[in-house]
Amino acid sequence: MPNLPRFVKITARMTFRAIEGGGVLLLLSVFFAYVLAPAVSAVRRRVRLGRRQRPVSDATAIALIYLAVFVPAAASLVSRELTINIP
Image (cartoon, rainbow, N blue to C red; front, side):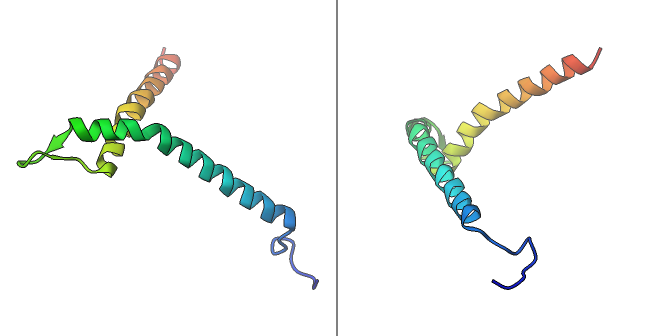
């Protein structure tokens, strides 16, 4: 192998780590989608928008679930930090 700079050399270990990381990410995303599917269908049944009262799309249902879960969690973390840091 020619004398390449150190940052250019890609070893088998680095390639395996990249594949392993992608596999873990894929497994976590499949598990999270499996867990979220019942909540998405429930939100689609209950939330209707517009004049014709159509059910929301899957993407909108997922966004609503994220808002319902992560906004209160972030607000509690911020309020906890404020009470700790402000005398």
